[in-house]
Amino acid sequence: MENVYTVLGLIGALCCVGMFWAIEQGKIDGSSRMYYVVNGIGGFLILISALYEFDGGDSGTIVTEAAWVVVSVMGMVKTFRAKKGS
Image (tube, rainbow, N blue to C red; front, side):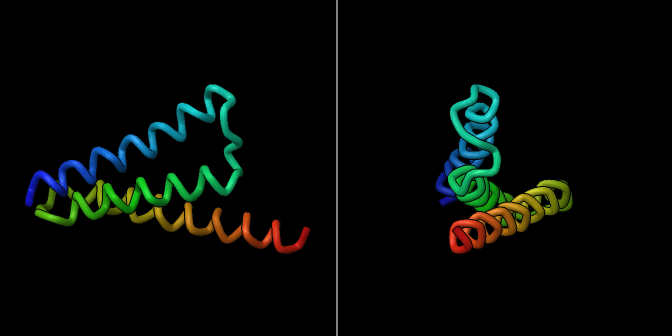
């Protein structure tokens, strides 16, 4: 079962780093819904992975990823409101 959580964390990291790469390459807009959704999913998967066998060393990761998810959700809400208002 531990391998499942490891793989989830790696997929999450790929989501977050992949979105950063896509922005740097001009492939995606940093204010797009896709950016926020994929980043939110990535942060959530890393958070789940870190919480699986929590120890004190995971605290920084957990705080960072929880903030990542919250900011991503805020961005998603912003993009949904903007589209609704159009």
